[in-house]
Length: 498
Ligand code: NAI
Ligand code: MG
Image (cartoon, rainbow, N blue to C red; front, side, top):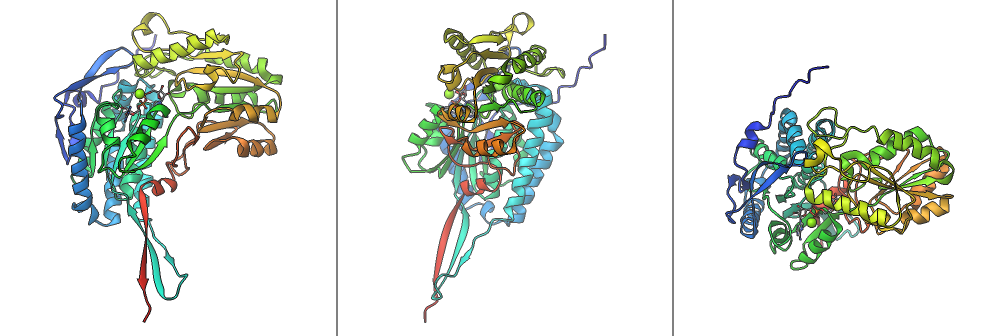
């Protein structure tokens, strides 16, 4: 038997250090006097204690961000200097990439190969991409009236609150920080309570990269009746960017009404993944697996509704279940793990509850269908699960499970599948597998979603906009579109009349 070489735990020192809030350029204890624990989802063991920020801490952080925005060095430096800080931050994350990958896997549970080869490189790329935008923000001149010189300025919005989830902890932080900093805003980041660690390590690097005090503040803590809520209803916060559950999104919108702050929302999804009989079936099988089981199904754009052309249903299902039953489930720190645990006991229970609902609705378990026993029982694992015989109007087909649970729905013809695909409250993404180029483009136009993939799934790029239709939210992150989320346009009129 091969001897498994134990990798050194690079994040050991960080785990041993106190986990404080980053406010006004310093790491400080929370005013609440409380701490909360964060656990390893693979083992249920406590990783460490983290300071629990509350309303008073948000007040302090907002004051620091306001001071840095109105009177600090940040507004006086050049765009190139801003870009250099962001590039330095990217370099520092890259230098510590292996430590970040371990930290992300320990705190979130995801397979180490995904942390190492997807999450952390994407974080570095996001900071580099948005560093490039610092020097490319421009206004325009408009010469409609010869008596006036009229131009526009693209200005930062001001103090921005950013509330992020636990599924891609550091990458979600980068998607938020990148454009906000590029545009010259100051910010308060509220990481998810389940996964606060990588954001706090990033905070250390923010200071090392030379960002002035108060530009980036990081307050760990909870959502409702706590730090998250205090941030979203704060009267001196100019904008909230949120990623998470649709229900929470509604709370954020309500909380924003006080000062009518700007809001951008990236909420859930229930993506249709449509396979026609003329598709490359083996490629579509692989795409369906990646589409639903990547990150344990905890992906807002996951392909959780698999629409199969009736003609290929049985062939597809036998290939799919054969592959899925061979997936290696285990501790994310194990290099051979393909599917890890859910992020928390709460999420594990939520997913198992939906599995129970689907069974009660009459869906048939093609594989999985419960939590694994044995060594994995102490962690928050759910077996990769596939249901057949699902109708699009069942709860399992309509509600976001956010776990490794696939609903398979048969269809007959383009109109049938287009109607079913769109009969859903969400609209984040969708996919079509076919060798017919006309059918592909026609369906891409018909699917009501912010992203449509053709013969692929889960493709993302920092330069390509990402966001939702319908209840999946509003605003587009990534690419040049997120610049609109973090800037205001001002028109300046100069009278030239004699
Ligand atoms: P959540 O939306 O409650 O939490 C996300 C973030 O919002 C966390 O930082 C949390 O502290 C904060 N938050 C919660 N309530 C808040 C409030 N009233 N005001 C301000 N901030 C608040 O998501 P949760 O409860 O962790 O997961 C529940 C479900 O949400 C999942 O099963 C999944 O369906 C969905 N979800 C979707 C995500 C996405 O990427 N679209 C990410 C995470 C969860
Ligand atoms: Mg919640």
